[in-house]
Image (tube, rainbow, N blue to C red; front, side, top):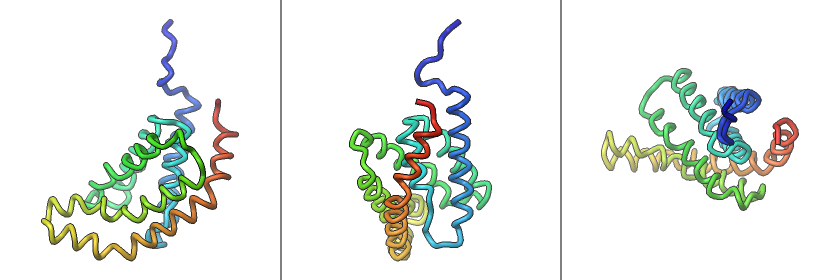
Length: 169
C-alpha cells in the first residue's frame, strides 16, 4: 500500500480546513453590517501559517460561498485573486512569524484592498472607472486598515494558540 505524501490531506486536516472555511463565511456574514470590518483576513493568515498551501482550499470555498450568498458580479472577480494574494504573502513571510508582523500585514492588506479590487473596473470601465473606484473607496480602505490591524493585534495570539492546541502536530 502506498503511503500518503506529506502534501496529502488526512481526514483531521480536511475537517479543520472545512471548519476554518465555515468560520470565514460565518464571520464575514455576521460582521457584514459593519463597513469593512472583517475577520477573514486574520483567518486567512492563521490558516496559511498552520496549513501552508492547503490554505487555498478554504479560501476557494469562502470565495465561492461569497458569490453564492451575495451574487456573482464584478466585485466577485477580485475575490478570485485578492485572498490568494494574501495567502501568498503569508507563505513568503512565514519564516518571520511574529504577531506584530501579521497585524501590520493585515493593516496594509486592508488599506490596499480597494486598489486590488479595482483591477476588474479598470478592465471593464477604463481608467476613469478604476480610479473612481479607488478614490471613492479611500475612507473604507482606511477603516479596513484600522479594523484589520486592531483585530489581528488583539486576536492573533489567542486564535493561534487555540489552533495549536486543536490541530495535530
